Image 1 (tube, rainbow, N blue to C red):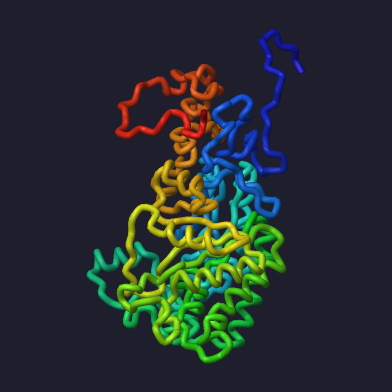
Image 2 (cartoon, one colour):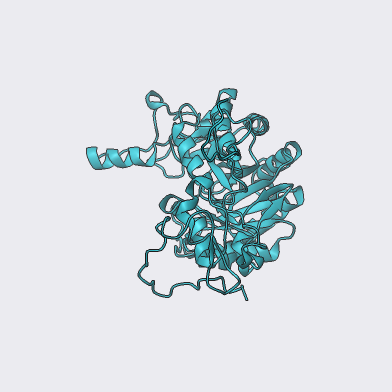
Length: 468
């Protein structure tokens, strides 16, 4: 090596060991609080940015990505779309990322383009995504699902384009010529979700239930090989497990139908099975209500029979799940009956999460549903209404939400090293309420953060109100 007279920098770049390409090392998880002895505003941080440890897995903050169907898989396999879609989130500071509803059997897909985990060939494409997220020190899990009677449908834009471009006004069931399975749509009872549009399903047999349990067990083993940090069981939105628990869609007369205990039997059996096979965090997503009180009256009729699925039965199910060792309940709603009158608005599903938080022991609670503002998300955690917040469409609209939230709430969190020049406004060392004096990495002007912005109405305080 030739000796140089140049002012040589002697340190090699830090990189992720074992990753197949060069990947800069993130010195700490993106979105995690920076050292409070240096960034004193972090000595009493917003609750949204407090880490959470579940079964040894540390989630760096409480702003989590909800699973969102992308209808972009190839024979159930993750594609480059998923690598970019999920990998981008890992660069933006989310406390957790969850892969979309992933079918444990082929007929458990909503559309032919849904993600799947029924075959070993589906392991490697997902592992590529997970390895990248882990290379960034991120946390990523997966939602295991079966679509039940809402299967073999077209992707939303495929249906919309046919309606808009062709004036289509027929059924929504994808035929075999386009990759569908119209004669193998499975459900607790042979009741269509939307007669004339959706498939009339086949009533699930006991043999099918036994095979389904094996499919969930096999999927769990694949999750281990892929390296996921947690698993969520999808029991919401009118898909198979919601159909089983709901008296509207379950008219069975065997041990999986009739009484409440019978209707919740399959979800509990699957939760127990996965808990025995999976040592890491285990979540369950539930629809807390069908929103049918205006149509059908009370959740429980005067004769003592359950009329539809609601918060009382959800609370009972959640306690049973908690007793089996499920770590977190992800509280959503609706999706199993078109007559439901959903009262949509900011935090519209939060009352259900709060009810469960107050009435069920030994389980963490996640809230979801039009959570779009940093103060709104933080208040949910600060006020003890839920332990984490899940964001979905807001992630797609504003992928940098966690970092913007830190800036707005007065916390200093770690951005991805490649993007740190964009966050110099946040990366300042405050002496509590004193004006920022020191910047991290680059100065304000170099990072173009010195430009004055027009004041916003009702602008949040520069420092989180909990900072003295």
